Image (tube, rainbow, N blue to C red; front, side):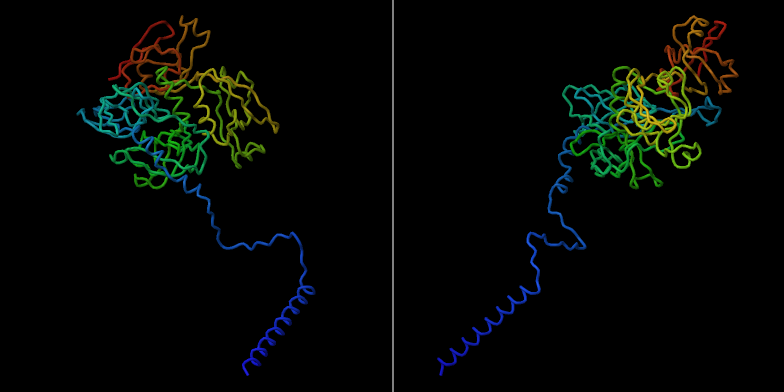
Length: 462
């Protein structure tokens, strides 16, 4: 009885298997087309997952922080300010009491022997400057030089040991979206490191203030006290000096700005070597193009710098650039805004050659231009220029600065007029307008003028 049941079960299983196999072969042969070597189709999903670990590793900032935190110092500025009865410009403040003020900021050690770079506004008007390292060592610093135009200054401290310092990086190679660290002393919190990315480059905070600004914009948190501190890349290289924030409340709200390291390096070297800034200029003025201006001037280009004026005797004039030419590129730097142009030229010195790529009447050209020192400037309401050959003979001078236009009524009431030559400021000889570029008006004591009739007159500022 059991043998029969087992045989019956095996027979049923065998028949079922045969029928299933037959059906599969039939269906496969008749209804399915087999295509050899065809890749399977991919159906996109609503998410992706990247198992690559590189991106996450790049957000490890510990090495960069370790390289830089000990090379950023705390800067304390003590100043004695007097409330004058009236200023040179005729404003009344009242009182003559002295007031002691203390300001703080940051600085970056740039050499093992104690050269430090910081913001000019951090040490402005200082009667005493104190520098404290991350190891709580305190030094008295002296000012080597400063440049209010770029808001940079160089300090020097005397040390008996080699100090940690931060090497310069190439800010021209820094890219939007790149990770950066801000290192400084915000709100008197020593040795603070914050992280962010580069949000923009060649940023001009006020296109109408006449200043040649070309900031790196970041979202690394920066507050009061960070000024003069370091902006570094993930290799621990300096790519900027933190200088300003854009804020309604006075605190950080997401935007901070740094002077690019290529400009910092040039200003640093100039102040250390020459004591002032050596500016190499094209000798043009004009405006950056946009759609509205392109329509106004009836040009096809909507980006670039359109030349509106050529300054006689400067490199652009001698090279043959003309009013209406549109500068598109200088060397390898694209010029889309005024800050692109000024930012790149701020890294150059007089005598250096640049290649200017420009568009004239719809055709592209390029030309070599030798950069020169400025030969005109505005100082205390006086519009000045270097004396020319004819004026040298009249005044019997080899060098000098002459008043072209006077818009200071008080100087005019003192008898100063157009055609006067400035010989000295604070008893320091003035040979050319470049000597006035970095001059601090707050330190102004006296000016010595030479009249066309040969008489000299000194104005004393009290």
